[in-house]
Image (cartoon, rainbow, N blue to C red; front, top):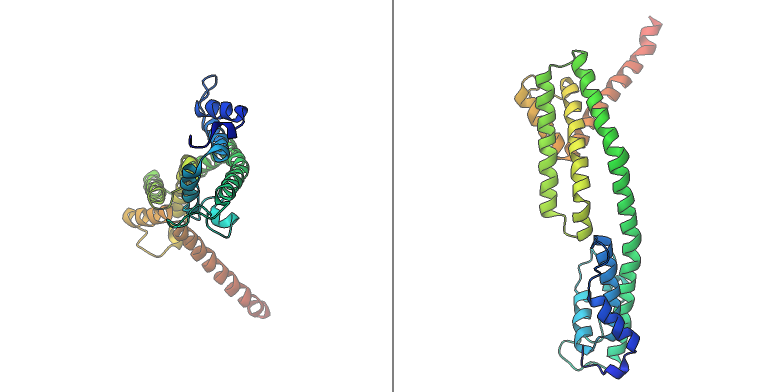
Length: 266
């Protein structure tokens, strides 16, 4: 980077680069502050960097996976002019690459800011309103089942514990296998707690609907715990159980409706 002549750089930009390299010491180093600082530093480096720096930076940006919010492939149709497989770069490749790197970095920042704002708003609503409402609803639901004598306490505990365990395991496996981007990692804890709430509701639902679910012997706690765990672990399994119950209810309703005219004529 220092191979570029100093007289080619405005003094103010060199001073800004020196300032940007140092982390701010007059305010807490929060993640949004660090990301903003990094974006600004990368923009200055793209403007002042020499050929070696731009070649490396362009190669890194070009190799980014498609999952990123803004990538080289989504913004440009060609590869970086400086990345030419060891051959001499064409004339004007340095400044062209500089402009392309700066444009891509600006696009990344433009996409990141609203995404970050939406994520923070979603987490605020989730923690302030959604999760408290879900947990209160689950508590009221469980107390209603217990106080009305629909099910014994042991059955409720078995079903809810198994469903929550399945939900937690499913979310941890997703963290291991699917969560790869920084934004996904930052959202993980909120979604983890939400998954626990979903598991709690799932356990209550399965315990109440046990008579309708004939997949296993639901008269034993082993069968109830198995179905509850599977429903908490897999959203598809839970929706399949709901569809099974609603499908049987629709079939019974249609059968009853078909018999009504015949019974009325008698």
